[in-house]
Length: 122
Image (cartoon, rainbow, N blue to C red; front, top):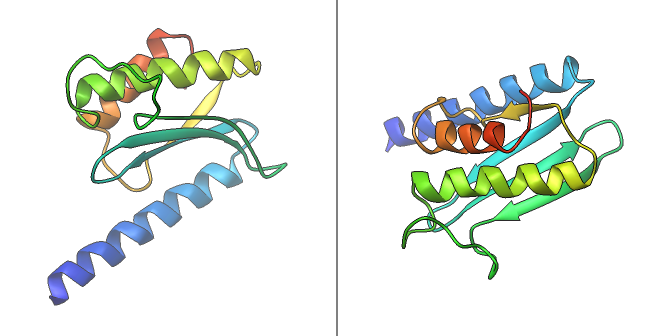
């Protein structure tokens, strides 16, 4: 029980530390990636104005992923392309990726690859 608590507290600290650094350096917008048990979601946030500019999730009815699952690497790549298209409609080209304390591997890497292919720079 203590180890599980320690692990979750460490993850929260990592997320807060990285988010603080992103906000401090931040002339760019922040691209936030979120994993839940069933779905993936992301949003482009302007921290200066406190506004969410674009949002995309795999739970949308318009989402058509590469497979049956809505939380695998294929879904993450498709989600990256979706958020890049919605961001470009709002005039967003450069962002900073907020991983929320997670390592850049697997679904996060696939998400970033899809967003870069669709035109976002980070």
